[in-house]
Image 1 (tube, rainbow, N blue to C red):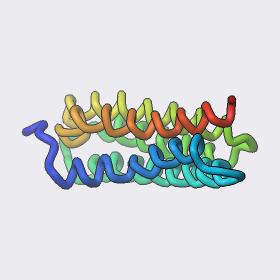
Image 2 (tube, rainbow, N blue to C red; image 1 turned 180 degrees about the vertical axis):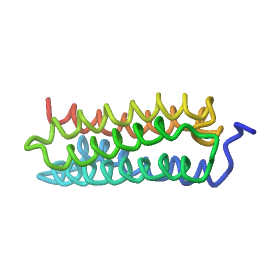
Image 3 (cartoon, rainbow, N blue to C red; image 1 turned 180 degrees about the horizontal axis):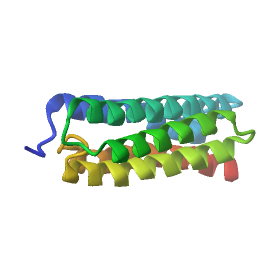
Length: 147
């Protein structure tokens, strides 16, 4: 199985990370109270993406009989749990830290899963740069709050 990232994988992989980068830039450049709105939107968007990725990971296990069901279920539950937790904790700084950790987990675990056949093979090349880009946007938001 090829680990070449298809064009739609690049577009649908990196495209959803751009709002997080924009939020990070916006937090540092927008006037007035707009940085707070940008950061709140980043938290919501990042959580939605992480929950979606949980479904993608679990869905791959349903469609591929050779994938490890326990590994897919564990990854999906972890991603989804982090996403939900980030939306209910009382402090935005904690939400951003949880989401950054969740994104780092995806970058690490989906890369490994792509190599082992528990996710599409191209995830081994895509997920690291994709989710670290999103993580950079989240880190910029966090840094603005902590300044």
